[in-house]
Amino acid sequence: MGSEEMYKSEHFQTHATGLFQMVDAVVALVKLGQTHKLAETLVDLGKRHHQFGVRAIHYPIVGKALIHTLKTALGEEYTSQVHQG
Image (cartoon, rainbow, N blue to C red; front, top):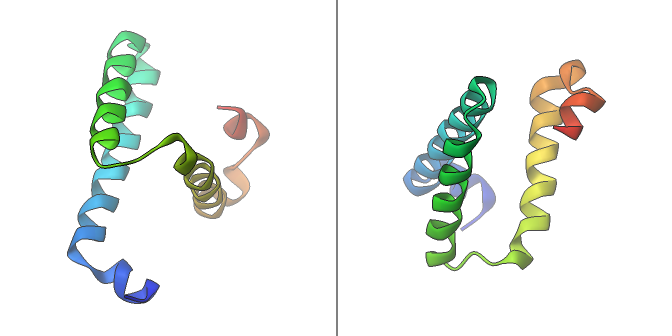
């Protein structure tokens, strides 16, 4: 399957939607100062990803993709403060 086909797949679209919902939830918890709920949410997310076979070796490439996506989406709003966060 080519990348163009992958992006159109129902599975990819569902995962992408879930990812953005999770990012929104994490940002909301940070803004509310609810770090205990944030920690619980991220631990649960890690457990689920571990069950799917995600391992530590996968994180650097995902991190790079996330940073690239944020830079592209935010444009000039992607500041050094945003990057540090």
